[in-house]
Amino acid sequence: MDTLVDFVHPFSSEEDASYCVDTHGGFFQEPLAIAAPTCTEDVVRLVSFANHYAIPLTPRGKGTGTTGGAVPSQGGIVVHFDNMARIISINPTNRIAIVQPGVLTQTLQEAARHVGLDYPPDPASLATCSIGGNIATNAGGPSAFKYGVTRQYVRGLKGVWGNGQCFTLGGPIHKDVAGLDLIGLLVGSEGTLGIITEATLALVPRPPHRLDLAIDCTQASVAHLIFTRIMQAGLIPVTAEYMEHTGLSAAATYLQVPLNSGIAARLMIQLEGYSQSDLNDQLACIKTCLSNNVHVSVASTLEERNHLWQLRRHISPALKAKFPAKVSHDVVVPLENILPFFDHLTAIGQRERAHVIGYGHIGDGNIHVNILPLEQDNPDWPVLQKKISDQIMQLAVGLGGSITGEHGVGLSKKDYLPLLFDSPTREIFKAIKQATDPNHILNPGKKF
Image (tube, rainbow, N blue to C red; front, side):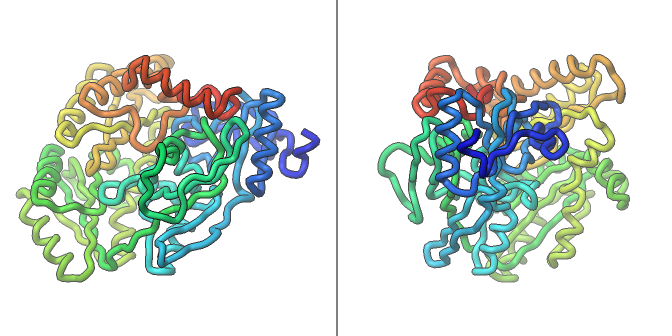
């Protein structure tokens, strides 16, 4: 590695242990070395070196993924982008930001808001995850209900294919139908085809007025009914989040805050408008969708909204604290099948003697499923949770859905790809991999 000594150093178990895992926690592998390139030319040198010596490269954002996608499963070199974390420019006229992959998502959002615009994708880890990682997994978040996921905002990409050739795709334009959609191919490819060194991202205006509602229901089915009525009324909230009692109770205990008794489920709805009267009209429409015996909390100031959202934001860490062996999945089902999906989750849990709960982005059918052990030290838990995971994936796909909505495939989901894609389609995937990364050095062992 003499030619790369300026930005590559040997792995140190004391200093670099975090690069062996991601938030999933179930996958661990030490790499040979850590690379921190500062420019595209560094990446070209690194990819050339890796191809020459057949060394795996694992591009990595901030390690906030939950599927093992950033774990160097075959060793080699981990490539992080802490030294490529600059917002190159923001152009309010074009409504475009040009950024390096190491920029934090929240940092870009804050910079965009300084010029009266916004970058909508809002994964839960937005304060700590990076744009490069978001692009790699096609990350979403609560606002995806109205604004879509990362792919909708990527207008251009620069970087290096696995074969060592540089690419420049798209740019600061909002329409481009020439050629094949190679940008769309790279977004969500989890670092298996190329390494991104620069991204051109679309920004949007956001209405200045916002209102958040927490709708507490004594029956879970009522929460689903209210959401259906909201959709039928023609409203498109920014977010529509669903939480059931187990997650709410765990978060309340975790944060040491009170929780109204009798809550079986909570809907979190965020509305926005260009005037207060617009918000009032939307709120009035929401109220016509409500059932009896529900409790509604309304928040309009930033402080009130943050307080209202604190339970939703802490469900995952709260469940992890209460059930250290918990297993999480994110799946997607069509909106019309959300209620049957939850009913089946309950049945699976009862049949297999485990807590199986779902919460999350009910607005776009992206449900976070948690498998929780009834016993904290069950020696059969690895086998049991795998059995339950298999059933959940088969259920989601059987209802017309997908095995992941925003977390990617990584290591934890790759065995389920045949549920979604037949053999001829998977052969096309492999052919694309072969064309862009003939020596299979980029994030090997993932997706293909």
